Length: 595
Image 1 (tube, one colour):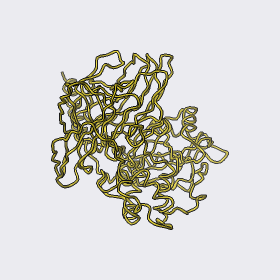
Image 2 (cartoon, one colour):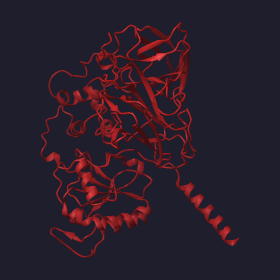
Image 3 (cartoon, one colour):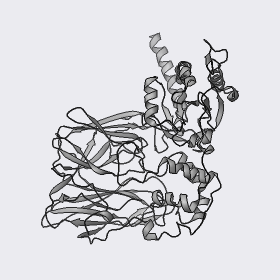
Image 4 (cartoon, one colour):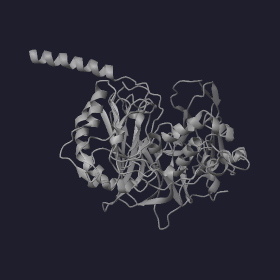
């Protein structure tokens, strides 16, 4: 009885302490560096702001001092990680790639993720110049509070059996008791990191180098009437916003193309290359030279900057009811149903979802009340196995199905439009239109939406890394044309793979920095063939903690639900049945054969 009472008292004390600790942590999101690790994981440092400290140990492939320091480093990780210290390695070497870093990590059994600073943006920000250096960052400001070696055991071409100074341990001990550590940068021994700025020529100009990057990757949203809050109209506007541009480039918040660039080739990508990220930051840091000639952004006509529209004449146009959008606050999905009254079925060749107000329409989906028979060994599911089209602001608003394929619409069908609205700070209105384009004859192939999904999951309050898995086995040979990962506000990452009957595993897509606000249809450059019997598997992770800035309520236990405050787990895999000749991928209206 006494033991039970003691256990109850301890449990209540722990619960109270935990509740006091589980609070939102003020964070400016400045210096919010973000990098991929060697295994394809994604890390934005603000998501670790509940740590006591963030330690970066500078790694370099082949560096003997780093390799000999690993036993000391791993012991420090083992001792301090349980005390809420977060550890990473970081590689800023020009000569090392993600693949070679991954091999080094495997060969030497590295215990923590190795962040790949591919273009030295973080090396520039933190002045990294030597490996085997430990850098401690304040978890909420990402300011440096210590830098130096792990200890004094290693030197060039020599080492001691035991250290007599333990610099990193001393620094962490000081931090844990709220004292200021003493830096020892001057005594670091390691391999020099060749910095790119020492060999780069500062010749970047707005007209020659920067405006083309902005035009290709940013103007699609940052245009009058677009979803972005401000327009990239000229050089002066870019200079005025330059500090914010630098911040979102370093944190990889923008542009919002979320797929890992090493997996899959997508024809609708607006991903910005790492080299272009570096150009933008360098140009901002070095004084933002204008260059010569006319302003390229001023020369963009509105039609050039906006999404290209179709020249096709729709067979049916449906005007939706007016939606009133409040000035601010959280908005649940809005739904409208369209009851069709066709004398006979129709084969859709494509769909346009024309937003009436691009400022507030973030994305829209169109689905069918009647579900097609799919090439899987399970019953079709409502709502998710019947997606017809998805359109995101800033992308093309028209979907044309692969040549010689279409979506069948039965005469008694009902179409469901789901729209995600965002607020602008003032009351807004939207009247969206749906344009439908029909095949004159039955197409050779049917276009199918398959949802790799599960309803059976729970996500606990305050949990940071809940894994959910779903899979389907396909019963026919198929060509996959596009995929659409879908989670709600707690979604953190999703990866889709296919295991062929012979055991070969193909990575279809990885979205390691999933963001509910940027749900994209990823369209393959060429359709991917999957043979009958292949298993398509989706693995996702959810962050229901305060460290997820999108999370509306970390105290809530979550399960499947249709509203965005609930959770979902599905990936739409859009396919056609395979035949001898693969059809081309789903296309936007401006480069399709339909005219």
